[in-house]
Amino acid sequence: MATDSSVDEVSSNSPVVLITGCSTGLGRALVLEAASQGLRVIATARKISAIENLRAPNIAILTLDVTASMSQLEDFANKALTVFGQVDILINNAGYPLVGALEEVSSDQTLGIFKTNFFGSLNVANVFLPHFRARHSGTIINISSMMPYITTPGSGPYTATKAALDSITKVWAGELAPFKIRVMGVSLGFTRTELLGSNLNTVENTVKNPIPDYTIVRELHEQVRALYGHEPNDVQKVAKRIFDVVLTHNELPVMFPLGDDAVTSADEYLNQRRSEFEKWKELGMGVSADD
Ligand SMILES: NC(=O)c1ccc[n+]([C@@H]2O[C@H](COP(=O)([O-])OP(=O)(O)OC[C@H]3O[C@@H](n4cnc5c(N)ncnc54)[C@H](OP(=O)(O)O)[C@@H]3O)[C@@H](O)[C@H]2O)c1
View 1 (tube, protein in one colour):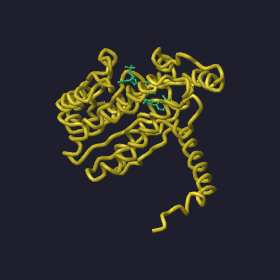
View 2 (tube, protein in one colour; view 1 turned 90 degrees about the vertical axis):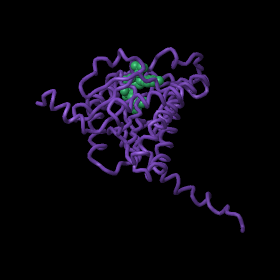
View 3 (cartoon, protein in one colour; view 1 turned 135 degrees about the vertical axis):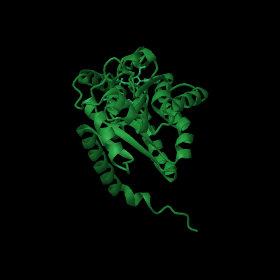
View 4 (spheres, helix red, strand yellow; view 1 turned 60 degrees about the vertical axis):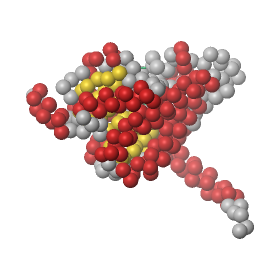
């Protein structure tokens, strides 16, 4: 077992990972897994008190609300870079769910979930990219979801944030390859965290005026609530697999379905899209300009 001094020794040369949303769930599991693999970790959360007990010789803690303004995020990045002198891996993990039909969720609620799940990841990455580009090195991991493969009724706003995140993950993969910056989106399946528990039904993400016609959405909400505590994937195994992939492979998949449910959903999605494409592709051709 490593002594305190050997932990410090390993830490001084090991990669530095910064993780958002570490108060519970996957963020917390990623912090513990990274530290156990000898990485130096900057754990962040909106409330520092929620991560105080993570503090360790190779784990620093900082306050971060990913919806902060760009100037606040730039200040945060400057501060984070002084902790260990560098950041090598950024994990955009912070996010929250919202269940409701697209028609009944208020535009403020939709904007709110985009501010965290989409703009939070985009903006936090953007304040670290100058550092990554200057060093011609760095890895961005965006924690997405299998929901863009499934597009279940009632998951609209949440799914849209993750689909948008997947889109910029793919664009970044091309834009950042010349700088040797790796980018990977994790299409995560249902995992045992607080997502479907205390964070599913907060006041700000509860539909204010449900439309009774949408029985299918209410049924889905009940199914999702009932899944809490019985999600098929184990959060610590998920965290371990993410680091196993990131630390042992030079080349990363742009999109990485994680969890048996996610792999099955991705497979079904790709088969359906391929068969629909084959059926309709002739009608999509033959509209070129005559010159
Ligand atoms: N669990 C699943 O089944 C599942 C499946 C697919 C994808 N995901 C994704 O996995 C990621 C982690 O979620 P989880 O499953 O670990 O759920 P969780 O236990 O609810 O954790 C979500 C974390 O995000 C943080 N957060 C929310 N808004 C934030 C903000 N504005 N700034 C900073 N942190 C914020 C929360 O912090 P507070 O305590 O401050 O609220 C919390 O620590 C999310 O992006 C989620 O969409 C989860």
